[in-house]
Image (cartoon, rainbow, N blue to C red; front, side):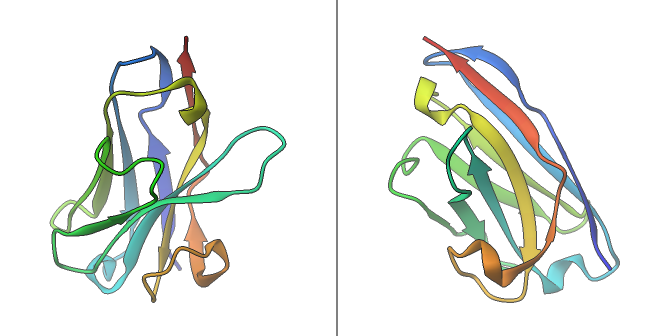
Length: 122
């Protein structure tokens, strides 16, 4: 069982930055592919980024590529999402997720954080 705790959301003006964190309670953190998803009101949950078990490279949705960076620290059982140049359309609840396969489908991730609200004002 893996417990994930998301944090770092808040209210920011367009063009600003936020860094989200997700702490995992598991001794096997490095075995999991980690990802961020988001869900805006009235919309489906959508993929944002994922990162492999040990490497530093991430894969991003086109809508955030060049603005967001996903990273992980296996020594701290934590992943991060650095969000720069934020836009009002980035407003959503952001969720971290853990799974065994690096995909963009939420259905392939087994464990989820509780979510953290990000609101970008225009």
